[in-house]
Length: 117
Image (cartoon, rainbow, N blue to C red; front, side, top):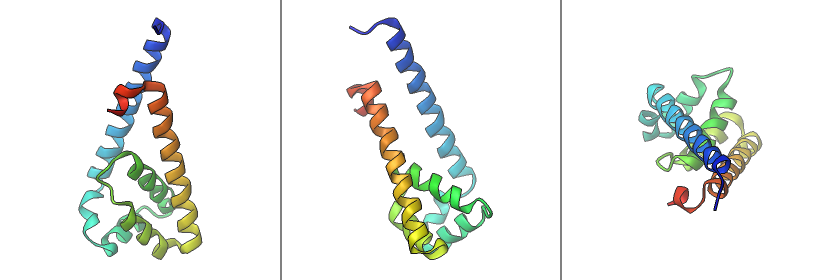
């Protein structure tokens, strides 16, 4: 049986996760991200629009693709390859997917089966 401190920690982490994911989804929606997924060129234009922070936006969107299911990472990876070059795009994509996966596994471990379900 878990104590009150562990239960409170789980609720805080769950609330922070929900707020983070909701904030990210709202940011992507407000900036027109979901509308740009119809072509490779529009995905490139979306990422390019955030220059000089386009590498960071690309990383965050790739990280979000691990957490939010409707984000097609294959289109984004192709757009990143064209924009940043193969090696830079690979390193950004790899590190974003790794970080996103670690976050999801951490949350699943901390919050348990009910979170995963």
